[in-house]
Amino acid sequence: MKRKWVNSIMTASLAAAVAAGCSGGNTAKEPAGGTSPSPAPASPAANYGDTGGLKLPIVDKPTTLTWMLVSDTPNLNDSMVVKEIEKRTGIKLDIQAYSSQTYKDKLKVVVASGKLPDIFHGQTVAELNKMGAQGALAPINPYLNELPNFKKLYVDNKENNWVMKSWSDDKNNMYSWPIYGLQRDVNHGFLYRKDIFDKHGIKEWTNTEEFYNALKKLKEAYPQSYPYASKTKETIFRDWSYGWGLGGTSFPAAYDEKSKNWELAYTQPEFKDMLDFMKKLYNEGLMDPEFVTDTDASWTAKMTSSNKSFVTFDWIGRLDSFANQVKAQNPEYNLRYGNPVGPTGKIRSLPKIDNWGIVVSNNKNKEIALKLLDYLTSPSGSSLITMGIEGETFKMENGKPVYPELKDLPLIDIKSLEKKYGMWIEGMYLRPDKRSVYYNFTEKEKEAQDKIMKDNKFEPADPVLKFSDDETKTLAEMKVSLEKAANEFATKYIMKKEFGDAQWKEWLQSADKLGAAKFIDAYNAAQKRYDDAK
Image (cartoon, rainbow, N blue to C red):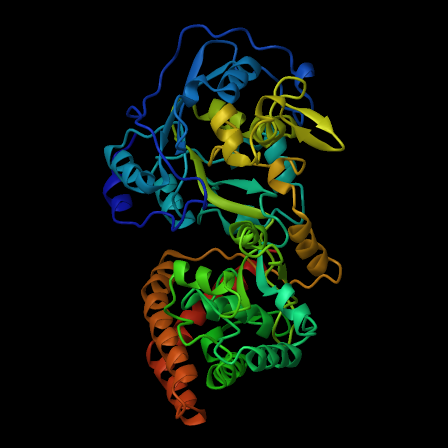
């Protein structure tokens, strides 16, 4: 393998985040390839459901693949999933697992060594394309005829085949294996204390003016309160921006569906309108003065008290976790998912396809590794990784999996399935089965899904673009300074009474000096190439 790519990759930053909730670690050996003692013969594919046309077993001679991923579950190589994969495919896995706290640092060391595992994840598309162009990674596209599940999902499917141009390099080689259908439709939004609203005869808002009036009535009932509290610090500007038509996965770059152009959210009139509304709430004592500084613990205390704060923006898991936290002291506590706020009446659209940078090293095992990923993308592999083995680990009751061996657990979630069976390992699930426990909603969470999906209250998803090396450099250099300056300005605009139209005009000039036009020009240039390629 060529070593010239090592130094350049070491200077690049790793992927920003590993999925929340998948932390922990165990000591693992350095990744190494090779073969293993003869595994048990793989059984015919007919026993394993829909493989999407991929023939099992994948190999006809003993083969070991190393796989570096994130998990805190010990002895994964002895887990049900790893053993079953060997039984079905003939491939023995050597899992190299690290905690989410140590994974990024360990990956830096592994990449620097040049001794890459057969499969790993955790870098950005730009980083991986650079590694691939220098010979370190195996491109997927030359093997499409051997990968029926990938081909069906990401080449033949017109809604999804944008990944082939948006994630590929300048030579149209694609290295990152996607994750399909992981996201739940509604995962975040405005939450409100329905028990307090009902107590004072306050109806849930259906528009921004009603939201404001509801907060006013709460303030009247509880003069010492700050009805709206926040713990996401400056992220509040991104979270609220969807309701003003400026949100998106590329924030602060915002795509205008009407003009088909990109804009900088921070300089749009709609952003000023949003800040003016926040300023109004702040000046009237309806928004917590600590909205950009509050800690998680302090915010939790306010939202679970009887008279501090009653409305917030957060994850839908809080609906039940807060109620369970205070049920002994306040059994009437009832946190519910509220309607969107802002003139669009929309929330974010979560992606159908996620990119966690799952790649295969360019070595003698590359085709086998790609076929394994293809199997795990099939309905059969998906079910194994995210549900288990029907009749052995679970049985279906009323359309949902039930796990007899875990019947004594108060809650069966993906972490308990990981610990018991080696399921739901980060970097290994590529197409989660929607029957999995991950998609079991509580009554409150189901209400949240229905409320938004009933009237399709989602902002359109923005195009996913492919940037040139120069554009990538420009965006990386400018985004940090633009975000920092915009967050500082927005905070002052809300908190300082003297800030108004004059200061907004000054901010527009400042943003221009920071390179706002050049930043957005990179998006529009990439958008033109994207459109021309259709």
